[in-house]
Image 1: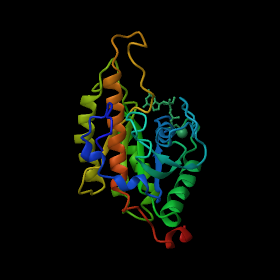
Image 2: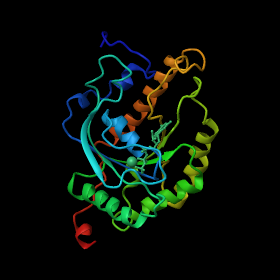
Image 3: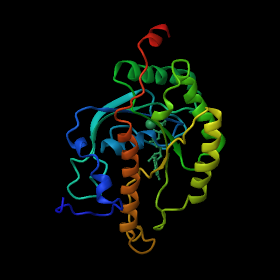
Length: 266
Ligand SMILES: Nc1nc2c(ncn2[C@@H]2O[C@H](COP(=O)(O)OP(=O)(O)OP(=O)(O)O)[C@@H](O)[C@H]2O)c(=O)[nH]1
Ligand SMILES: [Mg+2]
C-alpha cells in the first residue's frame, strides 16, 4: 500500500481500497444504458470498457440501432492512477438505441429495449445498474418524459427496479479549467427534479445523480486557451469515474431480477 503512487484522484486512500475483492471478482455486473438519442450512452459505455466498442456520433438519428453488448474489465482509475489496471470489476454492458430519434422509431426500439431488459432481468442474473443517460443541459420536462418512457417499459412486470437506477449526466466537461460550469443546474436537478421524481413514483429515497465528461481531457495550454490545467482536469475526470464506480459496486449483491413467469406471458 505504501508503494501506491497517487495521481490526480482526490479520494482518500481508504475509501478506494474498500473494494479489494473486486480485483479478483469473477461475477460480471450487468449494466444497461438507456436514454435519448445523442445524449451519450455509447460514449459512456466505451469509457467503461476502455475501448471504442460502440459507435458514437453526433446525430439526431439514432446511431445505435440494435441492442449491442460486450463483456470487459472496468478499470475506472487506470488512466488516472499508477498501478490501478487491476482495480475494478468485470462488467457486461448493454447499449441500446435512443428514445426520441428523428425517424420516430420509438415503437420499434421500445420493443427491443424491453426485450433486452427482461432477458437480462430474467435469464442473466439480473440487472445491477440501469444507467439513465442525459446530456447535462436536458430540460426537466424532457427528463420526466424520458423517465416515464423507461418506467412504461418495466412497470408491467415489476416496480422493484428503482434501487438499480442511476441518473448519469454526460457532457459535464471541464471548460477553461472550471469544473463547476453547471453548478446551478446540478443543484436544481438534485432538489427540484429529485423531489418531483420521488413524488411521482412514490420513492422514499433520492435517485443517485452523477455527472461525467466521457471525452478525453485536453489541456487548455495545448488548446491555446490559457495555462496548463491538467491537474484539475484529470482530478475531475478520475473523481467522476470513481463516483460512478462506487454507485455500481454498491449494487453488486442487489441485482434487479424478475421471475421467469412474466416474459413468457408477454
Ligand atoms: N463534449 C462531450 N461530448 C460527448 C460526451 N458524451 C458524448 N459526447 C458526444 O456526443 C455525441 C453523441 O454520443 P453517443 O455516445 O453516440 O450518444 P448515444 O446516446 O449513444 O446516441 P444514439 O446511439 O444515437 O442513441 C458524440 O459525438 C459524442 O462524442 C461528453 O461527456 N462530453
Ligand atoms: Mg449509441
